[in-house]
Amino acid sequence: MKFGGTSVADIERIRNVARHVKREVDAGHEVAVVVSAMAGATNQLVAWCREASVLHDAREYDAVVASGEQVTSGLLAIALQAIGVTARSWQGWQLPIITSGAHASARILGVNGSELLKRMRECREVPVISGFQGINKDTGRITTLGRGGSDTSAVAIAAAIEADRCDIYTDVDGVYTTDPRVVPKARRLDRIAFEEMLELASQGAKVLQVRSVELGMVHQVRIFVRSSFDPPDKIDAHKNNPPGTLICDEEELVEQQVVTGIAFSKDEAQISIRAVQDKPGVAAAIFGPLADANINVDMIVQNVSADGATTDLTFTVPAADFERAKETIASAKSQIGYMRLDGATEVTKVSVIGVGMRSHAGVAAKAFRSLAERGINIRAITTSEIKFSVLIDAVYTELAVRTLHTLYGLDKS
Ligand code: ADP
Ligand code: ASP
Ligand code: MG
Image (tube, rainbow, N blue to C red; front, side, top):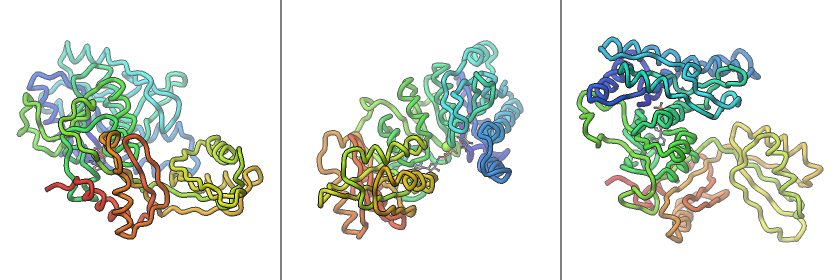
């Protein structure tokens, strides 16, 4: 059972979480719990690091931001004990949860779940584990898994203890066809395939951290997204169908629609290089230095040159890397050879996702027509087997998402 920040935002909500846990324990289940920091706590800790120094040591950043989850794991253990459930808190390093050394975005390399299992079995003790954090074994330093990383902690622990299911309790009662806060007509999905959830998450739906879905897929953990605001005492822990969304293998999907969901991301920036030399080696001269600078390039559009000499090339990078990307290109200008560098940050990438696209033609064409009818200009397009994305002006984000949501029949009736 994993509880996100809003679900543990204050003591009353932590008590509510404790009642959810007690319900499962009383039903005879062996449960391990993972918690996030209280809502807003991580943002505050990040802000303090920046205030202390803009260019801070990532190892110390981790020491600071990991503390939010330490608070909630202790508090939940106390709340559980108070209602008669045997419980204790665990920090990442105590299990340990071993990670890579990439501070602030570390990857889990291994989780030792043996002590947890032993205590769950022998003493019926509920472990309450701090999400988001681990330890780099080589240096002994605390690491964190990137924003939203408690989801990944939960799935990794579920895999390590061979749990039947990993329940992710959050502030919505499942995964929706798009962000329900933006589109009120969004519909809850009963099931979604791992591949689709992976695309939704990577294209901007922050309901689950991308890495948690990857881990679930690889280790075959059944992930169930549900709400912590459903009254704990009204749920029958023996019944297997509380409201929520099961993330599962494609074969387990009951009804298959062509489009499953729509995601959007405002954290994009566009860079266009005008009048680039159209000759072999130019793409390498542009994207090599960007790769060396650790900048992720997403969409790439290159025109076929009309005059045989020069062309335009457009690509997107994370908004946070925009300035750095422009500087990187500018400093390689003599090797690349171009006339002008243009950029835009007020852009959004809207992505339409569904495994049904594999076997249906013309899915994207429909969207292009419909966006054109609304006067929304498309700056760039990418497609893959089960997804296509368009880059548009940010002001049209909501209009575009709502238009496509209706177009593909996703609106709730
Ligand atoms: P937690 O603190 O529990 O980890 P998050 O804020 O990280 O919660 O994730 C839940 C939020 O994700 C929801 O409140 C919702 O606004 C947002 N969200 C974005 N896309 C979706 C989607 N397709 N389905 C459900 N929620 C979504
Ligand atoms: N508290 C961390 C964050 O806000 C991890 C999480 O909530 O999943 O990113
Ligand atoms: Mg989250």
